Image 1 (cartoon, one colour):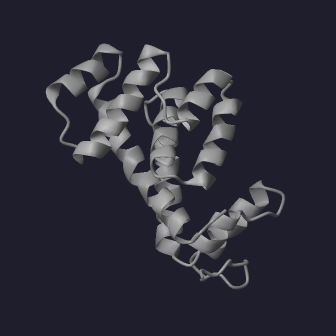
Image 2 (image 1 turned 135 degrees about the vertical axis):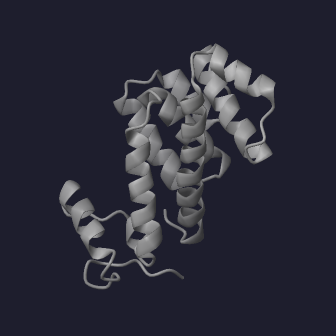
Length: 169
């Protein structure tokens, strides 16, 4: 139902982003990007927020645990596949990747705490109790990290919902 845009058919405001993505991936434009290009605001907004998340203070592995937790919870096949690749690129243990993909808690207590916190923030719309925060902080995470989880939830809820809406493969 949603148009799979090319550089020629996409709204003018989406074309620079699509061109950049194509240049970075040997001319290929992922189906999700081609469909999300229908809304330059969504496409460009997500990519800007995602780039900001890449520079946050959460370590890359913890950040990917948060993102995979959201992607699996929201059943976004595109995001699960993409972030499985990112976890592999970070040399994540295969057991961790499988555990996250199966919607289970990691054996690593620190990563399990960020996953549990992410799920708690989602379940309570941010109204987590003090024990949830204390548990997160006890595993070395900070107030800033807690807010970065909220930013990740915003970015990847947008992405997962949009990908599912446009039926991106």
